[in-house]
Structures are given as structure tokens and as C-alpha cells.
Image 1 (cartoon, helix red, strand yellow):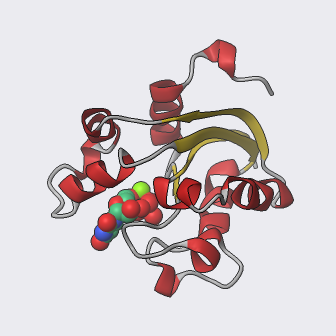
Image 2 (cartoon, helix red, strand yellow; image 1 turned 90 degrees about the vertical axis):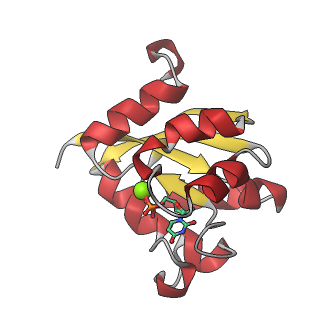
Length: 140
Ligand code: UDP
Ligand code: MG
């Protein structure tokens, strides 16, 4: 397996409930290293650019409003097979389907307000990391 980097976002429903540390601990416990981290608040327009791939989906408007509704913590996670490993730690999109012990099983409020984002492939990880971080901010 290759050493990979993936983009994670701790979403506004989770920062609002003060869950940043508990979620970060799940990443670290799974062997993922947090090599960049910052707390920001996006505008709906910025969230719209980030989630452009979903612009035809019925939930797009609501998703962009939600992602701009409070602070988020954007992080780059590094490790062997980091992209798939993070998706495992996150659990299924809908918390009702998420395996026990995953972030979404433990913390998500609904299919929309589901506590975390994670990149789904090497190509999207590269684009999503570059959306939030410069090379200088990634310190492995
Ligand atoms: N989402 C939603 N309703 C749905 C499916 C997705 O509100 O029926 C939101 C949810 O916040 C999800 C995000 O849109 O995390 C992106 O959807 P995707 O299918 O990429 O799920 P993910 O990769 O986050 O598991
Ligand atoms: Mg996705």
C-alpha cells in the first residue's frame, strides 16, 4: 500500500457540539497522522465551489448552506492507504448505515449533517487538499 494524503473536514454540526478532539482522536487511533489542520468558516459560495461535483443533486443548496453555517476544521491526513482508511473511520454517509464505532455512527445527526467529509479517490484528494492548503502548510 502507498503512503497517501487525504482531505478531511470536521463539519459545522460537529464543531458546534465541541467534537473536534474526539473526532481527531479517531483518526490518530486508526494510524492516520494529521499533517495540516486549520479552523475556518466558508461562505456558501466557497462551499459551492468545493462541492461542485454535487451541483446537480437535489441536496446541493442545503449542503452548501450547512457547510457555511459555522466553523469547520479542515485537515490533511497522511498514512498507508489513507484515503480508504479515512473512509472506514468515517462510516457510511447515512449514519443509520454506519458501522458501530465509526465517526458517523457515534456522532452524525442526519445524512446531511454527518460530522465529517473525506476525499474518495487519489485525484479528488489532490484537488481538495490544494483547495485549502499550500504545500508549505503540509508538514509530515
Ligand atoms: N448529502 C445529503 N443528502 C444525501 C446525500 C448526501 O445531504 O442524500 C450530503 C452529506 O453531507 C454528504 C455530502 O452531501 O456527506 C456529500 O455526499 P457524498 O455522496 O459525497 O457522501 P460522502 O462522500 O460525504 O460520504
Ligand atoms: Mg463524497
